[in-house]
Image (cartoon, rainbow, N blue to C red; front, side):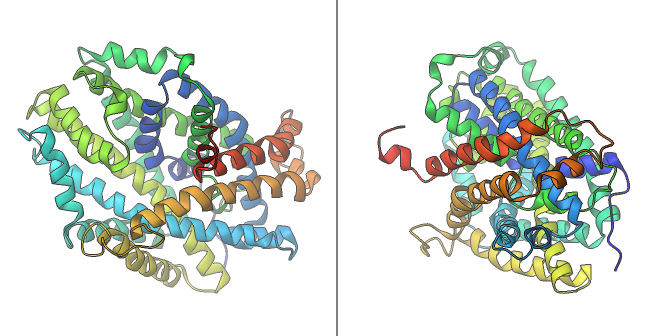
Length: 460
């Protein structure tokens, strides 16, 4: 069976950018920025994107395009049967694993989009927003409905194939995401008290920077670009041989970073407008589904058309960001199943979707009927979330950087990123140096920080 490629360079960039842009940009980035000093954190984050993120992204692109295979097959081909082939299988497992709980949150964003459009948050006292979310998340049926609908949309796109499904959806969703981001940013920075929020995001306070902030910036740069989960490698396997890998990686990183920083400009002017401190708005679901509905209502006028429109567009933005990433995560597993087991795309996608439905159901019900069921002292959702973020992603990223810097043939690497010598690559030596030394050490530090080692020994 002939393998599909993306039909255009624009489609390839938008698809890869859609893979990178996700809840990590619109959800996690503002949280990390708020807790780590604002502008100073953003500057360190951008440096980490350049030094840490770009080299690994280019490597994932190279490995995928050179082999034109799914992530597991790509590493098997390049490792020549050595144990390094397991790096690819780890990437497939990681993407598959993440999608199980990620789809649950995707369903939440759909539900909150409709709640916002229906003006449900108007007149709700601040203390009751938590009750609204807890009541929804613990309900045995409502979250499952949105979870299944979210997975159904992903399945539909994946079964349409690379060009008619993934590329076409990226060309529709990424411009939509960009337009909504700009509209929400303009609305937020136009608020009366926005100047304090802008100062928080633009004026660095270096006194707040310590080793913990630097570690958080490195971790956010790594997670934001969707490194180590097979997505970029899989999508690059659909690039044609003329795609400039370095330029594509830079474009994807610019889009990803723009969306992340603009998410800060959407949230913090609103937060400062109602007199809240960035450290007071909570983390994770607490920020996104409890604090922000309250913030938006008070910032734009409780029950006003502007409050309804802003809140609805924000949650729709979250939904689109979650969907673009989820499609890439599904494709990682689908490409693996279809190519390794010689199945049709429809059969392979059906197998992946079925497993996500089963495991996603467990994650969803862990807030309700299965809340007392614990794995390593965590409910199913937290176990999937913590294990992927604290172990699978940093481990995968570290192995990719070591494999690319030390194992992969350097001439092959140079030929691939230069498109056979047609493109200049003055950054090649710096790229290899980062992959060999900077990236593994940096990711290792993030790994230890995620596991709480530094806090345990009193270094943080």
